[in-house]
Amino acid sequence: MTQHDPQQDIWKQQVGEAAAKLVEDNMIVGLGTGSTANQFILALGRRVQQGLRIAGAVSSSQASHDLATSMGIPVADLDTYPELDIYIDGADEIDPQLQLIKGAGGALLREKIVASSARRFVVIADTSKLVQRLGLLFPVPVEVVPFAITPVRKRLEALGAVVTTRQRAGQTFITENQNLILDCAFPDGIADPVTLNAHLHAIVGVVETGLFLQMAKQAVIGGADGVHIIQPA
Ligand SMILES: O=C[C@H](O)[C@H](O)[C@H](O)COP(=O)(O)O
Image 1: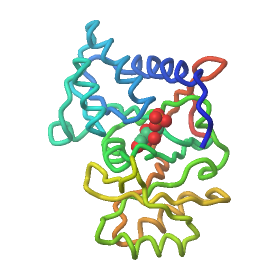
Image 2 (image 1 turned 90 degrees about the horizontal axis):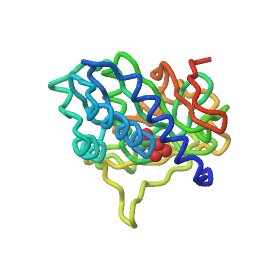
Image 3 (image 1 turned 90 degrees about the vertical axis):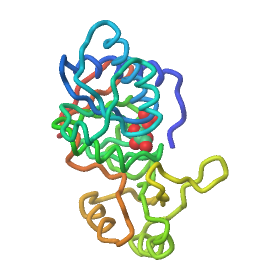
Image 4 (image 1 turned 180 degrees about the vertical axis):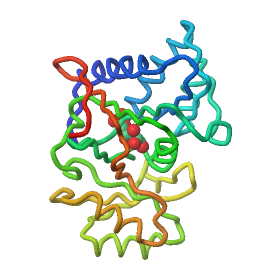
């Protein structure tokens, strides 16, 4: 895990503001989860207060729902808005093809559902999230049905993962979907994310993985030399 740099908070704020400018009147907007997505939600809320009229928003977590609502953003659900114009969210790792690891905050399943319902997914991050190979900094979170946790763990270990059950505040972490998360570390990184993701999804009891592949169309990256837009290599 990278060390926290106070400068990162400023970069997150800058990318949040840049991303909020991508939202146009009458759009339906997907709201990500995490400290970077929070900066986007705050910036979007300020734009809404200044007169931007979005059609509606769908949130990927209760925390984002609460923050958005407090900012005056009208949040509904996927039953109301099954198709979104844009989804904006952070990531834990971003490779040159804009393949992502997400889910350090535990929201990966709803994030992937909302992302896959959007015509355009823009990932936002500071430069610390950019990697050449996925898996060297963060484990891949795998959301699992609790009933299946032990057989799934064994099958993940057979794939070469070093598996840890996600904890938070000394307790087993339970997702908003009442599932568990097995964090799968790959000490040499992930040579072929597409194949690994297929193997993970073939395990019965796995609900979703934190590998977001061929989903992000664009990255807005903040760093020492300002905010840059990156397209997949
Ligand atoms: O479950 C959490 C999400 O995938 C976050 O978007 C991801 O962990 C990045 O969070 P942050 O912007 O706080 O680094």
